[in-house]
Structures are given as C-alpha cells and as structure tokens.
Image (cartoon, rainbow, N blue to C red; front, side):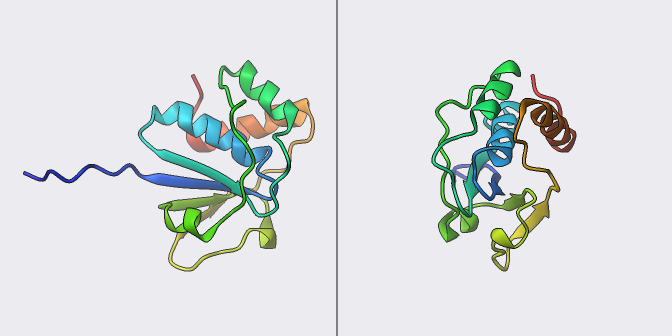
Length: 130
C-alpha cells in the first residue's frame, strides 16, 4: 500500500494580460473541478488589475474571482503544470518544450456582450458552470 500523497493534475491558463480570458477560464475550471485540479493562470504581459467587466460577468455566473490578480508567466509555473492552455496570444505566449499545450482561439473580450461569447466558448471546452 502506497503512502505517497496523491497529486492533482494541474492546468496553467495563459493569455497576454491575465486580466480576462485566462482568469475567466481559471474561475470556471476551479468551480467545475471541485478542487480536483490545481488551476493556475498567468500572462506574458500582465495587466495592473482584472478587467472589471470580467469580474462582473463571473459574479453573474456565481463565481467569485475578486481575489484574483494578474500574474506574470514564469518557467516555474509552466514546469509545475501538466497542461498549458493558451488563449489567442500567439507568439506573445512562449512555448516551452516537453509540455502538453492546447490553444483555445478566443477573442479578447472587452465588453459584456463579448464576455457572454467568451464564457459560452469556455464552458463548451470545460463543461457548464454550476
């Protein structure tokens, strides 16, 4: 019988500013995984703060991301993750060899109507929140 602790799978969600798409996806994934997945998010050029429209849209879906802050993408975060999901950042998000990558082609939502489109696209990739 093994006494080693069971490790959770880990996902790193990346967009350029880590203020919109990757924060939304991280919020949905945390809610949907019920703490069975270690979720990280980062940006290649992080913003000063989250997009307030993103925070409002997530709150409407019952997901609180008010404590989240944009973080810089680091080698350590990539190496600590099993899967790296990039979101429309192209060459702005570097690729590290030896990691599994997925690229979700999501536009950067700048207003509430595009937030709904982004949320719909994300939940079709991860499942439905709630």
